[in-house]
Length: 381
Image 1 (cartoon, rainbow, N blue to C red):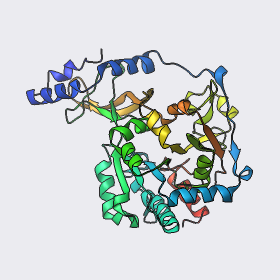
Image 2 (cartoon, rainbow, N blue to C red; image 1 turned 180 degrees about the horizontal axis):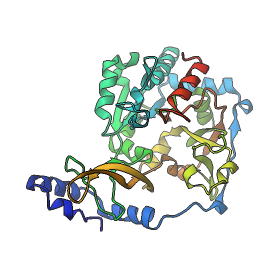
Image 3 (cartoon, rainbow, N blue to C red; image 1 turned 120 degrees about the horizontal axis):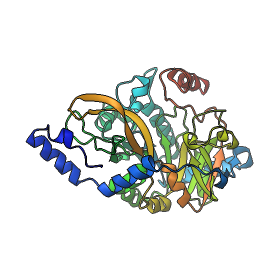
Image 4 (cartoon, rainbow, N blue to C red; image 1 turned 120 degrees about the vertical axis):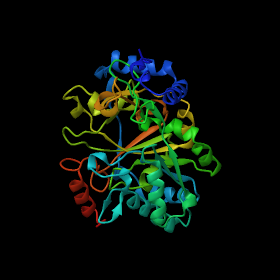
């Protein structure tokens, strides 16, 4: 089944065959087979009988000044780091290069976030460690972009890049696929691979050595994100949480996962996995903004995360070694599957304005136009 790429293999030159054989030996074929069977052949669905709304708090119920002072003290003591997920390309925006290099009025998404860190550093007189997860497809370009932009005024010794892991794409028959370069087709394994990548890259150990206790995580494509938001960081520290999440009230039909309770444990159910019409029952949309404790990150870095199936049209070689772009099976981990392992988890629901404006598409919903308008509304331009 899985190993059946012989039609292509026999057409390759000897050196190409040897290269493929070496790549094949490095794969965990038992895991690949299990993922194929669990996600494609025998997929499970969300059982709504065991899902309920989460408890949450809002800013007006908090002592904001007190919490922000707690956060600034921790930032000033070097105890807070920022973790950015930036492994994607700007393909859907028709932008060549990493999504973080997409610019509004000459200011890239990377610069918009870097400027916030610079403001914090100026305020607390302490450098903030910035950890950025890239991928094989954009790592080199991302590093080059930071260098050519002089790291946006930040000291490069405080910016750390590491790459997410990969997993093979498969045909619907369970076959490994081959790229135009005659390699086994691998794709980034999703944002849920971030925890094992932190460990394997040595980043977790680096954080620990620096005395970092709290890690603020966000995505690259939320153009108005409040990086290292002191209110969320302060709430996290005051309550000694393992995990603290920020949410918004989703719009009807909005494509965001829902923070909810699954068997009494906090989790996120993706909007694509909810039965039609059920998404309206859950009032906390996940916007990918969280604070983790260091102990929690170390714990979940050893947890095997489940894979989810995505159908994607990817370029690969067919059985006659002709390049085709056809629908194949792509497997991804979701970081929020780790939430069930958090013993203390709070959610802060915030207003959408100035907190969440995703840049996903060139036109229409969550587009360049809507993101630019939201940046103007919050005074960035």
